[in-house]
Length: 211
Ligand code: URA
Image 1 (tube, protein in one colour):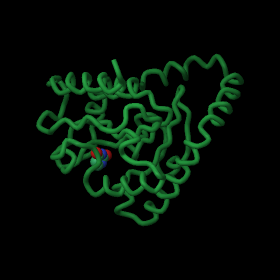
Image 2 (tube, rainbow, N blue to C red; image 1 turned 90 degrees about the vertical axis):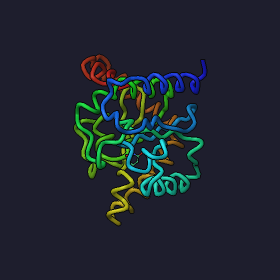
Image 3 (spheres, rainbow, N blue to C red; image 1 turned 135 degrees about the vertical axis):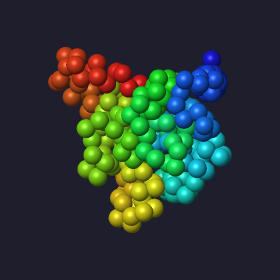
Image 4 (cartoon, helix red, strand yellow; image 1 turned 45 degrees about the vertical axis):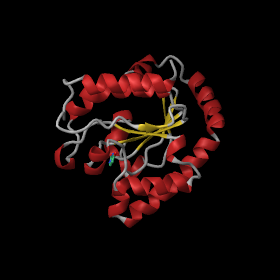
């Protein structure tokens, strides 16, 4: 089965799963190229995303489009999804139990796409992968988690509210482009470090449960 077919199957399964919270909203599974190296993950659908059943189509989505285009990429050659696949009422923050409930599907989605780089947008998506990270300190930096590079960036909605956050977001996208370009070098560096710290099974076990 191709990645596209696997994702379609997963989406259908999810649509039928009425044990998932936020059933009053539409399912926004995600979209893009399943063969991509770069996976963007937001927090959860908002009003416009719920209506269109597509991720990042509102104002924050329009800014995300510009940022993506600024790197000479397009939505067609990356993949975009969210931690929560249905909109929380009035766009409130995701609850820990909602994140937990959607986790098995997110894990499968990540496993199918199997990107090299995951870009969490905003603190909720970032803390899913890096529970101890702080968005103002750690966005725009690359972190290895198992065999994936995690590169958190401010949520585009934060950039719409604050011009210095917006400047940092543009800078982080520039850095992300460089990280993508020198990915193979970073893998080599990681291999050297991995050999030095081999045997840290506790860390590995913790990392494994996320995707
Ligand atoms: N904010 C998100 O986190 N995700 C979307 O899809 C839209 C807005």
